[in-house]
Image 1 (cartoon, one colour):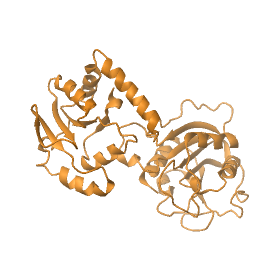
Image 2 (cartoon, rainbow, N blue to C red; image 1 turned 180 degrees about the vertical axis):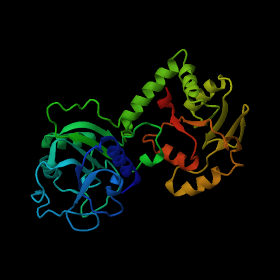
Image 3 (cartoon, rainbow, N blue to C red; image 1 turned 90 degrees about the horizontal axis):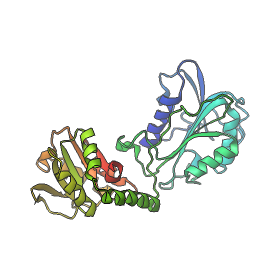
Image 4 (tube, rainbow, N blue to C red; image 1 turned 135 degrees about the vertical axis):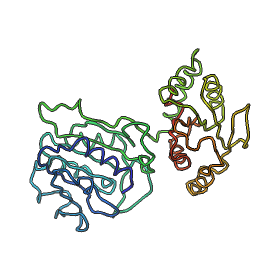
Length: 340
């Protein structure tokens, strides 16, 4: 179980599990290979039942027919969850039908599965899902979707652990019953979609609008004021980076540092500059950390609480922030299109 799937299931449990009375929860694909969701329910008034295709750690029920759970009573569970299992199921449309049958009217389902990531057979690795795929499964079974997100998070400022190469799709749905109010239920709305072409189109659209604005400084200025920022590290000194530096220089009381792979250490019109020579390769993470966390490397940012980083490089999948979080662990980071 990668960390991000645990965080998303923990979010679901905290926001959806009713603690006022005893509930029943069924976990599909519960076999503990490298962790399970059971521990997340500690302290909750929940009867946990783990179901999988073979006996083992954290498995309570092994159906004789993996696509027909006659050993479980219909409409007997308040919650059904499944994480990192649906990519391994050969016929998921049959599984989603069984989930519908075992769920009580008004009951809630939470399913998460990868949209990317490497092959991993347990015993098969059949699918990668997107939001439309999960929506189609829910429609086939008769479930009503509450929320579907791709690598969704509560907001853009959550820790890097929410990022993962598997880029999980996350669905919350219900077996709808009359009078059920779905509008007030919590949703993961901030997404990190790996959709290169559309991402670039949208981000450049916002950047072009911002560049053409007469008072383009205002959005950056308001953002820094709201974050009570006293120092900005600008990562990337290309065309957009230079524009950002020009705008921040106009704001009184804001100190600047420039970090870029294509510049040399030194000063640029009085602004300290630092080079990042290593390529963005995961194998070099320890090298980056060793180099950039030395106090003498960038002394200005040591012991400073009001520093943030603006990333002006338009990478296509947002993995850059994950790597920069490894190097600069305690500095909040924002892509320029998030600010404007």
